[in-house]
Length: 351
Image 1 (cartoon, rainbow, N blue to C red):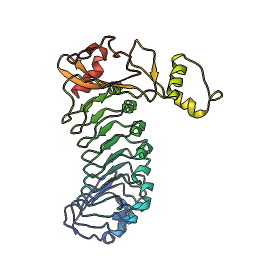
Image 2: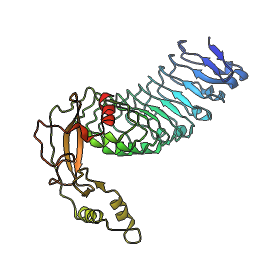
Image 3: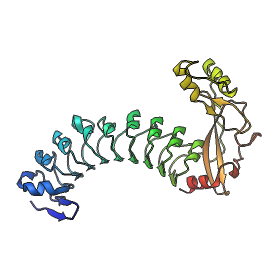
Image 4: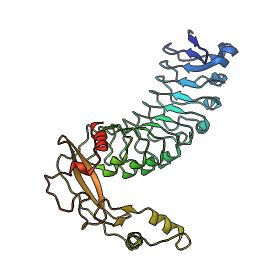
């Protein structure tokens, strides 16, 4: 067994990759070597199980076990109390492959791309220190709402799966800067994603998108938006499907439009929360609000006569005119380019 050992002033690297190993006797290494090793690379071997003595590397912070034949990760890995990065790409792992207490590890970067996961393991969603999560090229069909628990997440890669919807809870990740959802089956983007104020890159190419929510223009830090390979519509489209508002919504609209004061002392908490969820109609000539019932209106925004982007508008009622013009437009018309700040539009369209 040959290994490459690289020592620096800060860490010790033990490289045992590409050695065609199917078993590994780590106990043959000296106790000092195991104690000093911070980074261990076991990738591109033929192991079907991790060595039971792995826990002896008490100071290990980086572990790469990619491109083996692993179908299970043993309980011993949970004893690596200093592990910060785990790379396990291109194995045979699924939701049953992880130990129960995997979520107790202090991991900050996790890469399980190229495996057989059909859902995100619950253990992943307990990694509160996680900053980078990659589970691309699996068989994921959905993103669990519990994704909101990963409040430290900055990078999320879920490309190359079978995901059809984006849960609004994804918008509750305050640090998320890079979101990759390409090569899935996504048909729409929830407007709540506009709350991702740290988002710099959004990859949605090769999905089933036909429009984007207008709110995406409020992502002021967005520098890259990838949309290629989507069936984005190529002409002005208007969708006036509309469900009449409930009595609750009508009452709520009256309270908000008349600026009536309310507090938990006056109303039950659930009604106060409901009223606080009101969305203002984007039409500058309309003072209305809406809650659950609104008119979905798809229209194109032109920029410099070159780029066209289908955006979704939400209006408070069918009688409400376009948020950018009081006059109805024909199918050949597009929204005036000055209706949206040019710098924001340019970031979206040129990204």
